[in-house]
Length: 296
Ligand code: SIN
Image (cartoon, rainbow, N blue to C red; front, top):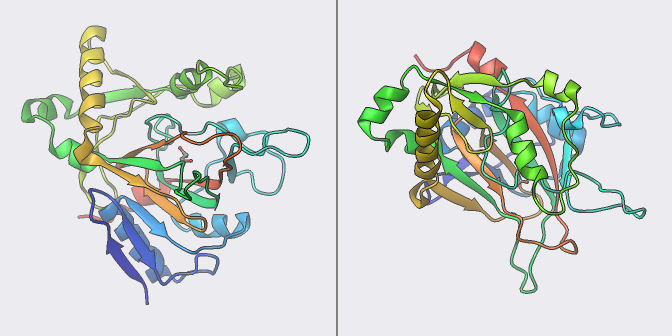
């Protein structure tokens, strides 16, 4: 039997009773989608998934993105991105070491936004006392929208925001020790800045979502720069209040699936090079859910 038990927090639920390595019936996919839209962040504990099995699960919800930073990945599964601080015997990185290490919403820079990040924990770093490190923090953008002042809700109604992939990329590159290269002209051309509504209607729940994030949101379209900067700065402070936050402490075998429309997240880099973290990620686009919205 499938059970969905909500966390005692502003986000999150644990889903038990499913082996995600096996093909799932449509009813289970619908249960997961509904739970995702209700709880924002889902934990499926004790999973064991090959890249092919993770893809087979994820693609039930929408098409899978090949990340623009992973376009040259060799191998059978370009939709799977390895996020890791580990290196091979020759010292070559096994994955992207600094993925997501600041607040952002995946793929908001994309013309089709993402529905969900599906992240499987293969290795979780721990401190000397056995406590897990490398949490992922989440922020609830339905709660953040609801708590906005009414006058600002009215001003944002109908407004659009430009999101730019290069913004977050350059911010990460500027960090000491970053080995990210500048985006190539081809990568920039593939992901040019795009505009999305500042307030999005969630295609599964119909809830209103504040769709702005400090990683990629560059400006409010058509507003004076000073005003756009001031309102974005306000929104970035507002949306990260403690009341909207939830921290996930990882256990190996966790598969986390989070709503990439209604949440922000942040990969906490509080572990050292000797404390190994390895995650296997795929990104589900929102093409399918926007083509068939669930709410009436
Ligand atoms: C991401 O932003 O996709 C990475 C999240 C994480 O590794 O915790």
